[in-house]
Length: 284
Ligand SMILES: C[S@@+](CC[C@H](N)C(=O)[O-])C[C@H]1O[C@@H](n2cnc3c(N)ncnc32)[C@H](O)[C@@H]1O
Image (tube, rainbow, N blue to C red; front, side):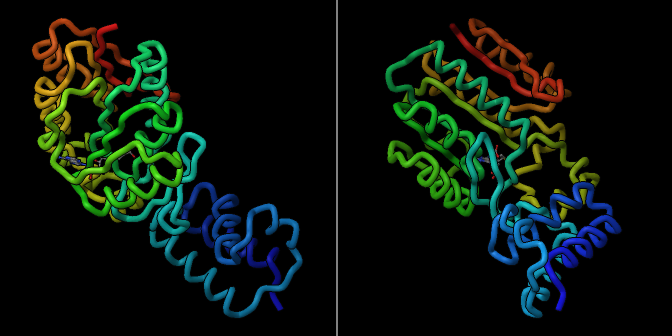
């Protein structure tokens, strides 16, 4: 009978042959997931036998992975800012660069020290940004919004599970059209990839991640620009906006913001790989 060690070696080989870069880690995670055990248990039981039906389950997962399905969708989870979020094909897989947006929001809220700030997370996807800041500041009054009802449902479940806090709402809607109250902070990681570039993306992204989460229109800035325009109606005079952007969009967005928010200060912050990734519009 085949054992865990043998199945791990053969899984690694198949993933390697199919140019999956992190084949050692991914094999461990796929096999542990199929056997419903942790990675530590997997290695502690490396000589244990594997049944025929377990082998079939592993084969099925490996086939999905070499068909370019992202690991996070297969496992159904992705870690973000120290918490495990449920994900599926209705939501973008949270990216590490978005943690930089979350950190800058946390810094801002810490310095601003508003008693119960009203915060909008627009294009919330799996809810990662809202959940991460609500966990950090349980006093914020959070509204997370997404145009996709399926994404909004996942965001609701994730925010509730991760924060254990009822002080939030999740809405389905087009940007902030339906918001009639004045808010202290608008945060957003909206789609920012130019339409033409979408078919050139990695197959994992192009074939599996939702187009509504990627496609930012002809220049990539259409949705973000619309949000900035709508923000003028509901942002408090000393409120702030934090946006994740593509570095190439910096000037076009800065121009728009300077025109609409002449008294605000605009800053561009870098992500961990040194890319200009976050645009903040503040009055301190
Ligand atoms: C790039 S994903 C980011 C998801 C999440 N904020 C994150 O950082 O992982 C963009 C999200 O914006 C949503 N979206 C796209 N257009 C929108 C619109 N007009 N109004 C609200 N949400 C929108 C998509 O459905 C998607 O969930």
